[in-house]
Image 1 (cartoon, helix red, strand yellow):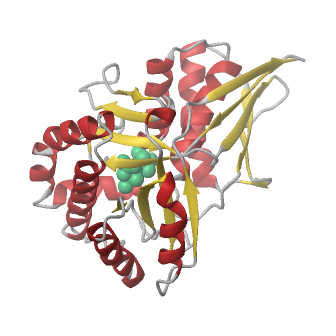
Image 2 (cartoon, rainbow, N blue to C red):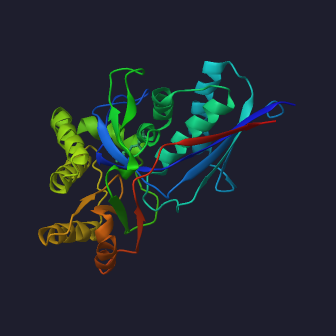
Length: 328
Ligand code: DP6
């Protein structure tokens, strides 16, 4: 019996300029470009094995058989790889996160980055970084940003070939830290894929998208020049714009909780007092506080005093997806 196996690890990422809405939902060609940072220390490890003796794809997540919906999403990516390579075998996919699932961290980004890398390698493909980023994008848009290293920009493109992510600076470029203030551990009520589909129903989305190149330019330059003040203002503006679109969609999506707002208000006060810190929120109530290494302890201490904050989880800039290959 032949089996072909490969293992890959990937980090989740936090977006400073957000992806919200698709021009082409099936290919995940986004309405606008986005910029993010990979999160070091938080890791998804995935092993893919194509086996001649298996009839059906199998997905094991953190030691347990995954739901039908999760398996279907994984199967779509395996089918893409099978179409490219002509491989016929079913696959066993085993995946583990070292970070708590449901902690408000975009686990689909790390999951599909690791899956794209492991599945393509196990099938005998040797994809370069842009090709791997494109493949990961098919599984989850934000996953394309977990392929390159450090600070990353997703070039939105207008077709499958032109939509992929590149590194704009390595992890050691800037000593930023993402301190996630966890206010709720439960999975979000409306997932991102559904949310992207609602974006065009908001009258604010067109304006948000038209202005995106300006925000991307400001954010990219602020990162490259390590200009925290400019970075903080554009990151908070972009998060607020995305949430304004969410709140004004039909049906409307409200992801913030009272505790999220308390943390956001405190962040403005701390920054006015001279601490380099800003907030950004994804499709959930947990608040990502971006600061620098010198201020992590201060921020952790202060944020834990806010009612409703359960705990914090901190991450420095992370590296790219990485692979180990073996076969028997
Ligand atoms: C709010 O990449 O999770 O985190 O492509 O449907 O899997 P799918 O969506 P996903 O969307 C991420 C949305 C976001 C903003 C961001 O990470 O840019």
